[in-house]
Image (cartoon, helix red, strand yellow):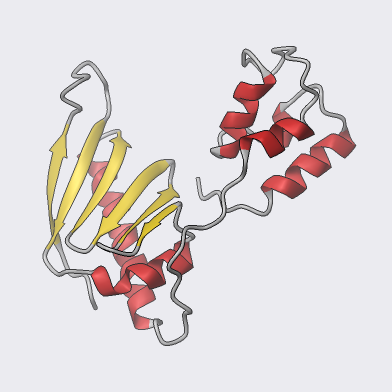
Length: 174
């Protein structure tokens, strides 16, 4: 077992004290820098840095960054949610470490959907029937995993299939 424990630091954004969410920094009892390329390969890192090693993943509706000696998680409901995600991530880290001989490490971020590619697949009539101001906003949210093809009322089934096929190339874990 590589990662055994941590000490949590729960904070609210100093610049926006009125927000209802909290952030967590988990200071790790053991450094996990060696597992980061394997974790990146398994979880499909959104952002990856080789030196110093870190990977940011999008999972469970959060941005989670794993550094060698700490983990940062944004926009949490409470400390209980932080603990739940940390325990899930502990399992992922330890599993990747145990299976590292079977995993090809990845030193780059996973490919991301491109807003303009998504926009090309949309009607581009800015009808706002989806509840958003424009097709550009819809495309930006779809690129982040927040909108799916069937949420555009103006797309016919063929258009939905094309958009689903494009978005299906990318990993969305939330």
